[in-house]
Length: 333
Length: 297
Image (cartoon, rainbow over all chains, first blue to last red; front, side, top):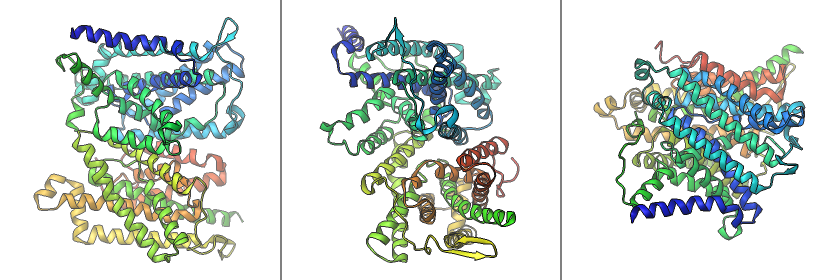
């Protein structure tokens, strides 16, 4: 009986996700859904980087910007096809991510977060000031949308494309988490000296984590560029980086679902608060920050963890059988 | 001509940089007492500037009263920060990262509160430090009279803090707690009290820096986020997160770098260059270049 319930709930959930564009012809809902899916990609990268490998990045939006602008420039200025633009965006993000990983060999926690903040700010200031390349605060226009046999993608098509990509990202992360790479990462996260003593190359794992999360951010950025069609430096500020980290932390850093839950919740929350019926339309950012603050204070292990706990209670499963989790999170050094 | 330009930039850089140093002190004091970084550090500066603006320009309370009342409120806010943010997070098992993100959200929260109450348009700062157009002419150098005020206040504040930390019992307790919490409480120091003191000191010093910076940046949302806050962090890092005087020196360095990159390169890239300097310092000397407190490893 309980097992059936689990199947029904999950089946209904995935079914709903699959048919959502057919149920709602509302372009706004679909657009926000697409944005949520794109944010999920970035937030999952951060869960991987911060939750699994223990490296903090408060400049993740810098990678998103690199991906977006690279793809935008390659397709507009060089006239290349979109897939090449996206691949170029990802590639450049990964390369820059590998460079940003270098300070992480020596620096920890706060100092590393400062380096990444500085990185994000530098990218932002370059976007604003390198007017000849990026269009400055005027922005970059006429980025071609993706096309299916000549006609541009609708929001529905983008939705399915992003859904497939998110599924692939989660599959990748799942495979990585339970592979030797993931186990090495948890080891480095717990204690990198002890990990080194077990012949784990901590530098290699850190570089890998930075590269992967930067690549995911770049992918998300490149897709955004083609979905929206124009780029300005506005959505690439320090506070947007903070927002991505908030997504990862609110969702929960210690499980794969964290990025998905956090990305989804924190994309929809401000949008819902913006609606007239919520009554908060004038100060949705204020209420948004208060809600996030409360979640952080009262559910430090994240919404994702609470959700899976609640669900497994619903179908009466025993908890915490064989899970790979971080010991550090509880001890707090 | 060239020499006077140089001198002018040095004076400007040192003065503005000293306030970055004050912002850095807020970071240092909290780091010393709780080993956490408050990313909403800079919000205290913005809040103090807006409070001062309210009391002085809107309620006409007089300079000294407005100043004292705003700083007192900011100090109380420091206590609230401890008991409403840090302690609940600790109680529910949150770690450093939760505190980081919580304070980041707090930073956004204060920005939106100020935006809702005062609107997004910068307010002109009341000319308490002399008219904005008044300059003091020394030879061919003209210095805004505001700079003298800033310099004077920073000097007094740094001296007072130095005396407090080095010469009084409270300072001794504070330093002992910073070095080793368990040992300090073993010898009968009230660690709880010194932690609260650290919070209040941190927020009120940053608050004073905010009021001092307001004539330059106006009473605006710029004071509450972004580049200024990061320059405060940079100053703190240069002092190795321990040394108060080193933090001021670090702030002055950032101010000078900023002014000279405006002079020689371009004002558009002054922030880029200060951030690059920050990254270089972090990688080259993570213990800080003006760290005179802890020697060696």
